[in-house]
Amino acid sequence: MGKEILHIWGPFSIQSYGLFIALGIVLAIWLFMRDSRRASILSSDQFGKIISITIFAAIIGGRLLYVLEENSAIKSFWDIFKVWEGGLSSLGSIAGILLVIPIYLRSMGIPIVRFLDLTAIYAPIVEAMARFGCFFAGCCYGIETTLPWGVTYTDPSCAAPLYKSLHPTQLYCSLAAFVIFLLMKFLFSKLLQKPGQLLCVYLMLTSIARGSIDFIRGDRTFFSQQGVLSILSSSQIISLCLCTLSFVTLIAIQLFYNKQKQSI
Image (tube, rainbow, N blue to C red; front, side, top):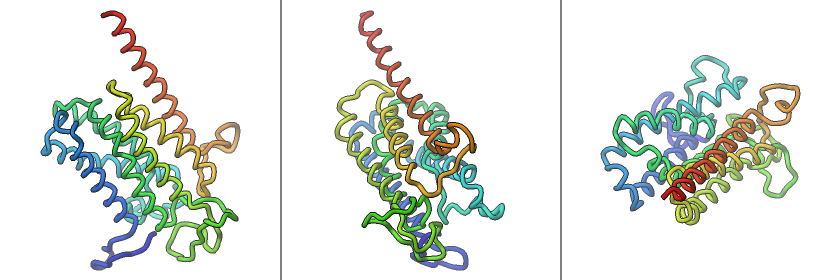
């Protein structure tokens, strides 16, 4: 899937999907390193090691959830590993990072919550850029629309249905992620000072954005054909659970510090 930008040799080439993910990661790293709070949390050398683990966890988690949700797109065993052709779940990537990184941070003696709070500010940049890769690859496409900005795919190599005007849900997701970044960077990072709050707000916002846009996704998958599981897609159910858990945690953090303040 996706447009081949540069053919290197044999099966190796640079695809638009992988390129935009790489650009997003580079931009997020650059912004993270320039943040004045970074030096008090970890060194440049430590950050370099964490980036490698983070990328690995994000790819594994994102690909695993994609394969579970879109198993019909996997035609052979080797297709599972063809990440460069498109097919990563943003929710899966987030889950992979949240499961792996705290363990690694603890082993390095880095404050876990403070690191994740700072990371939450710049994580939307990666998703915003990666969705452009989805757009060119044709994956994560929308339902049919008569709106003037509908997109029609004609390349047989893309994942979207051909010759139909579709909602550019990939661009909707990209725009939503960029707005989340702006809110995290210029609003919430100044309003929320307690450890864990920024991470919770980011998880809530990205879950709400994904769950809302999913209603007009053309490739939705469901856990069941009956009951509520037939109304909400698997991604929406995951988003709902993640948003609820983050909201409850956010309230618990506030109550904890209120109680601590009263006891002083």
